[in-house]
Length: 538
Ligand code: NA7
Picture 1 (cartoon, protein in one colour):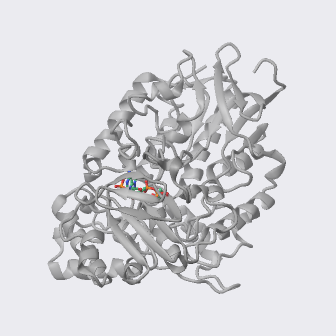
Picture 2 (picture 1 turned 45 degrees about the horizontal axis):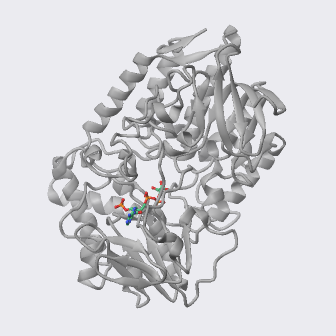
Picture 3 (picture 1 turned 30 degrees about the vertical axis):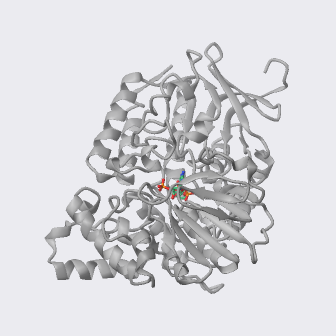
């Protein structure tokens, strides 16, 4: 770093998704000297990278946008759940309205950050040879910045095209009459399968765990008429902080067995008809705590789903009679016609779970399971991410003692409020571990956490303070709270990226705060109102 020209700033923001652009605008407005750097070549974060056919958000409008009226008053969406291209157009709109480009550096991957105790500043280095000296380091790297492909033997030997879903080329691939494989049936696998089933000569889907996907309830909007009057926007945005997951809906105020079977069925039908995440996050709350309540929800989902699948053997894989894992405790995805694609003659499904035929290796021709070798022209690994912590850990961040953050988190994530790490002063992050991340609608959390960070910086400026560091004890207590919430729910019993178990060797622990947005909002605001209790400021 010593030989590089160093740019001095109040703050460096890393990542140009919702979190990063929000902080750039708001910090600049507050008079801070701030820049944004981004690995990709444009705005959008995950939407910059994820260009696979069918990529679509499963937060509905107007919750997948920022709340500043200057952004929404002349912006109209074409669909209730917009696709990737429309979201990228939205980011371009925001960049123009907020005049972000002049303070953004693209194609810039932050590789190192080192805390200088004497100066009370971060020394930051990028792969492209830039260096910054900044008072605050603001990581908005998102929950899906680090791709994961299982360590299968033979990937290099495959003579066709092997790619991860988030590395789709900018131009669309010619898949007509090709033999295509998708490995993985998370949200990405489901969306991809729907689209590729329309174009591939033959599509084979390798499923390890059934996705208890729910009908999306997509709506096409006519321009210029929008389904939701703009006059309602401000109230809707205010409501986000009252909703468990940062939307407009909330759990019911009664439990599953408070209702008679008839009442319950009626309630389930009502939620089902609404589409969206309502059958997951606007239902009886004990669905996430009680096995019996959970089974009721699963059975309803299973019956609805099986009715859409012609072949009972395929239905047994996609929607088994016996529940495989607690419903809603792995990320539920929203689908358009996912279960119907398995009725098409050009679509096959292979069960690669432990009780099925797991994938053994990738061969020159295709995929070999414990039972059979399949030949393909394209293999798409929709195998997810080193979620939530991976994006932060891939930066070599050295704190007060010189220990890297990645080492410090080796035996599990440690944070205070899901915003800061003890021993790594003046560093904040959004949508990271131990915050409502991933169970909180993205833009909602970008604003909620972003506002807290900006206010903390303003507070320090006003008081003439140079350094804010989380205390070890507050960090320890926060982790206890994270476990308390998780242990009270069925979520901690299920293998998922919420629990870190999708990555071999990653500690099994709840990576998200399960107390919901309103409780989180109150907790972090109380800390601020109390003069940043649990932090040491000087
Ligand atoms: P996910 O949700 O992590 O899905 C990854 C999928 O890949 C999932 O179905 C995995 O099965 C499967 N997988 C992973 N490793 C293997 C192996 N070795 N063999 C077979 N199948 C495997 O990632 P997505 O990209 O779909 O979604 C990420 C988030 O982005 C999503 O939740 C939204 O918030 C947006 P498993 O379930 O682990 O058995």
